[in-house]
Amino acid sequence: MEFNGQFIHTLDAKGRLNTPTRFKEAIKDSPEELFVLTKGAKCIVAYPYETWQTILKQAATLDTSRKNVKRYIRFFISAAQECNLDKAGRILIPQTLREHAGLDKDILLAGMLSHFEIWDKARWDEDMAEIEKDFEDISEEVGQMFEDTGPSPVH
Image 1 (cartoon, rainbow, N blue to C red):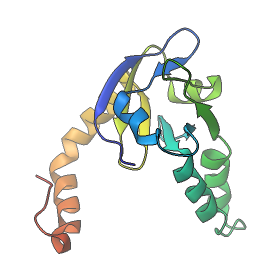
Image 2: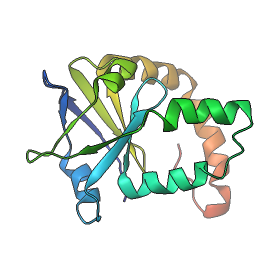
Image 3: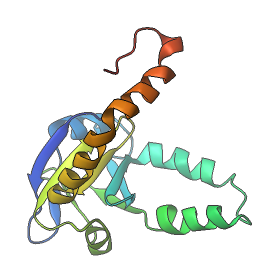
Image 4: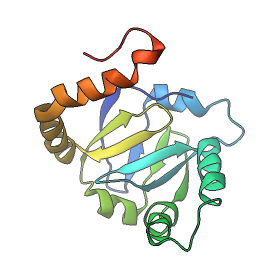
């Protein structure tokens, strides 16, 4: 399952969000046709159920006596909620997650390979403006990571 692309949608009054066809297609053949939503940095992160199960197994191996492991679990793992697609292909975003991400009406969904992010459009635009300022340095650093795998897809 891979998620890529950006899609702009509108959150309805009940907190439901249309899911792009491409994202629905990514989970249609899985045994559990649902996403797990949780807190990300300034956004909501959405994982296919099976991917989330892998994350939980990995997190269970972490040393919970370490301060930042506990903080990670409290922030990221404990906020997770399963969300089914309704008949219209929408997901209901829980109020606590909408508040965390500052979701109002205009939403941007961003594919992030194994998952996707759900952003308030204005907040996304602000974040992208910051990234654009540093993109030359970012691109150079990421390009170096690709050196061993062939031609760099980073420009």
